[in-house]
Image (cartoon, helix red, strand yellow):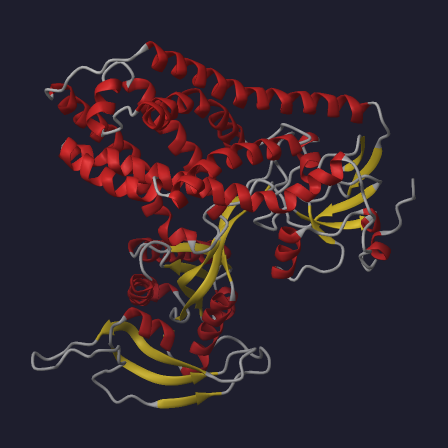
Length: 607
């Protein structure tokens, strides 16, 4: 084994072209580079068919005649040549490539939702094969009536429970796959709730419609269906061959896994060093992500190892030249995140030689053994309004107050501020010294968040005025506060630490701009400075404003903002005023414009 060199020497090692590999393992790696897309497309076709079928069931609430009319449209789609090829091709391809995915695993330590999805996939054929043969196959060979009237009479009531269970198994299996494929995308959060609502309503309405339609069909005057011996024999034979074929294929894959495990455990072993987590020796074959799971190393894997996210990425510090080149999906994702040389996806590399890797995405320090790090599902970028507030001249105030009095005043101040923020559905993300940062718009549209932030700022200013009246005789100088408000995209999520626990945070340029607007309040002698973006997002007009140009660090052009000398108030309109199509900052007093030059450094005491 090559000795592991120092970390800084390996950071700049160029990525080699990768060695040629032959044999069963190399073939499996080639399959995995494109089988994910085949699994997804075929699964999406099957879920689309199931959705149309279940919606057809749901129409049974309106009666069997309505079910028959919708079925005519559905048959036109799925009984066509293209629909038949797509449906039955997917019905064959999807299970085969799903089994290939399972066979590629070198450890069966996995999250519970992955275990559930595999278990559902193995259970579905137990009920699905009977249903397909009794309807489509028997209809083709014996002309058995496939209309809802006849099929419902056959199923009700003896097979109603098993058919409802089949519906739930198929739907749950598909929805789990779709959810965990999309949850890493920022856009998913906008329609995650409607998606969940539909995922619950469709099977529920389908079962209700199936029950209502079946009871109506049971009362219809129809001749009894006669089943010949040939039909019964063919049905039993086809069911046996169908189930035997599928579970025989499963048995072959299990046999393959057993032979492979015996083979790898009796051959050579490699040494893998996980920086910060020790060194392990094991047989080659597992991916680095599977090694994390096997040895209980805390890790991130948002997509479950399907090369749809980059959360499991690692820096290969030694042995990179022995790894094969990234496959199509991995290479595409690495380009998307502008990954430097030596960075690979842990779920896509199967080392055959000694290796040293370092986890790049910070993982939870208090994750127990065998417990994988799970990213926050709610994390993402969204349009928010950030409020940054700070007491002015606090240093001068603290020098003239006794410690107990000062801390008591701060407690009262933060209590008032907390009430003002939460009353407008905001969230305080941080307290620092004599200031804090709050976020609005976490729920609802950005306009609601902008309106709530400005209203909260007004309450904060009025609360400070009330504190001055209450503590006026005890304070050497009155309390003054500066508030900066800005609306824009920000990243929100949860971070966790052994000492601090779990905390919700908000980061991004929007926070920086709000902080600089708060700093500008001292220079422009305004209690509140609100960016034009926030005013526009709120869709409202406010009185008593001064137009400003605020220089923002890192931006070439100054930011347009508006200063409030007191608590922001919505501008009152006269009855004859025509509603303005766009928000205009207007007030009872004249609007002035001021150019504010960015300060080069922090000098002097807060005014």
